[in-house]
Image (cartoon, rainbow, N blue to C red):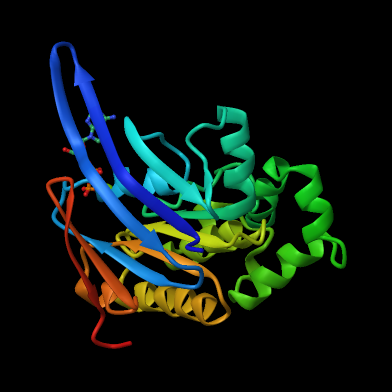
Length: 236
Ligand SMILES: Nc1ncnc2c1ncn2[C@@H]1O[C@H](COP(=O)(O)OP(=O)(O)O)[C@@H](O)[C@H]1O
Ligand SMILES: [Mg+2]
């Protein structure tokens, strides 16, 4: 069974009498453990699709099966719980909480993890210990008590990745994760995603950077709200 199966996903925005169809019927199957890049011109609907995939937004119509289960029928609360359990999100603009330390930013998603999953996922390690392990792994242990404003762009994005990993998600979604980084920090971020993929995580990255897309196994090209091409990446 595919991890995710989208069928006929449409997204329409209304402004007064004017309707704009942003996604015009997206069909997409994503297998567990895949590394996918979603590419396409600015305004083509990439972020809209990623937000729908990440259960942050609902489509206007269509079907979204997560492990064979239709998630669009769920209530907002149920969606939030599912999101906390399954999905880690990384954004171009980091979205770290400015008044919290790096460590507390990383621990934040824990508050949204349903109690049952928390028991299961943290039966053999304390969450605080796990957060420190992730920070250590991402080369941030000496920054754990810093505030975001004291970090470089690359360190901010690595903190955001640490936060995305906190709830041990199946799926990591990243929207232009290197968009605000210099090329060396961007490469470091992509190497981390590549390593997470090797460890079995499913990764979906939205990008308009060919170099970033080349890390993926499969490239899905969107244009004007439709998938126009699906291809294997040359590198993998
Ligand atoms: N909340 C919204 N209301 C109206 N239009 C929106 C909204 N969000 C996005 N759009 C429009 O949807 C289109 C696709 O946006 P987006 O998914 O962000 O594209 P991309 O990420 O590919 O640049 C754009 O034309 C954008 O202006
Ligand atoms: Mg976008």
